[in-house]
Length: 163
Image (cartoon, rainbow, N blue to C red; front, side, top):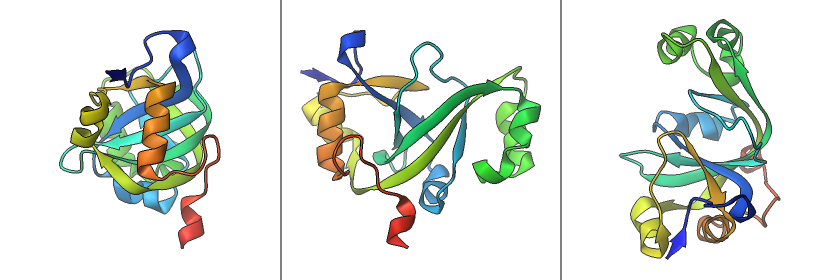
């Protein structure tokens, strides 16, 4: 069976899959430019992020170009409230008791024309939504791109183009 997770560096597609709470869905549609995560890649920087929205959505709903990945202090995260489309209260709650927090800076969010569900993915590959992130294998990325009707690989259209 095809593995969603790249098991070797040569299998890495240049993309990560990240799990998010469903509250991020409207923010993705609104074109946010940064997302906070407790863990981010630190050794190999991917070029794209795929958004798996957890239950009750349980689907891959979007992808975006990664412009940078940083590790910052919770205090600096508060300064990104507008980019994150989160209130200071939400940022404080997410970063509570942490010394640092990861931030993906993103651009060109592309919403999936068809959101592929966890069960559909499991029918064609070994797929388990990650608690933090996973490096997507070339085969998995290709299947997801095709199933979600994303544009050609490495070409992302802005979510704003639909509005």
